[in-house]
Length: 444
Image (cartoon, rainbow, N blue to C red):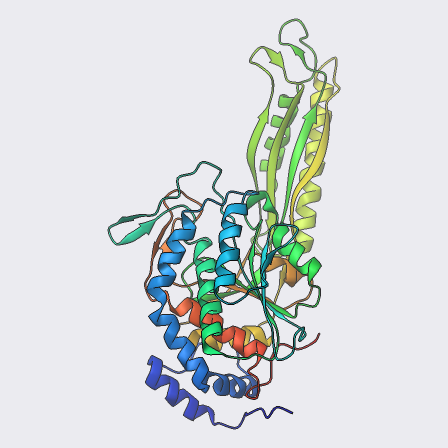
């Protein structure tokens, strides 16, 4: 039976970390209360010689990790066409020791690092998304200008993919053995109309996952513990259509759509919980001299509260039906209909700050010398496990950057190694070290 060490005093631990990183593992952050038990487990894990070696290696290997990041950035991964980057990422996982890695039915790259005994449950899932928001044909060449690296997708989320490869690499070389399995994934479908299809498939295929760490983006100073829910629809308007002169008097699908958009723009939503909407795209009609037979718009509705999101959806649909009725009543021949087609569903959710995953993440950020500035709510892959009641957080992969989702996206590798260092410490704290620490990842 393994012997788990938990008796080293926290002040000793703080002194040790201060000598290595220049500050304590649990600085005065006043954001996430840390239990004594988790402090003890974390400090024993942190002091392990193999863990210290792995942390040092992450910093030493960061130049190579950055080259890998830039290399993957230049492999296009537009929505629903992530296969080329997926194949490359799969190869890299295998090179780094996860020889049984594979691509699943949805296109996700999956690699499992076995725990103390194969199939040790529950496993921890660590993922970064393969896809970008940019359409096929976008130039993804990395260019350097004024000390910045510019390329679409260089931070969101190629940085996360690079962090995962670094973690797998040092784990393999260090010989660290965990109690629980760790599943590493490069998932598809995080952006846009991908609708989190990749992460949904992973949790469908692996319902025993006990916790989830998503590595996404740059600027590691917050922990995303809340998932903003979203519902996206195409409102499709249809009618008979006709010639603009000869068939005048027939109701127009475009006119009905315009009425609906105007009514939707008048909807009022609460500031707290934050609830928003926008009509993002419109299309329809045949020609300038035709009464439109069809028209549609895409609407994005979001809220940090599932009830408010449902209420907003009901209002938007109701005013669209009113607009159709008004358009049909306006003309002698009114036969417009509207159909609501769901094109995106991201459930809202959250992970409480008292969860071990959040506490370990807060300590890991402090241990690497970064400052935790707060907990945040956003729409990420973590929405799915949060909605299932599974502890999940999203943190950044390190470095600095900006312009995400724009052609001018940029990245600067300022202390970028601290991203994968933080994720490694979270992983080891949750999965547990064989003969050293109990896993904080427990059956639920």
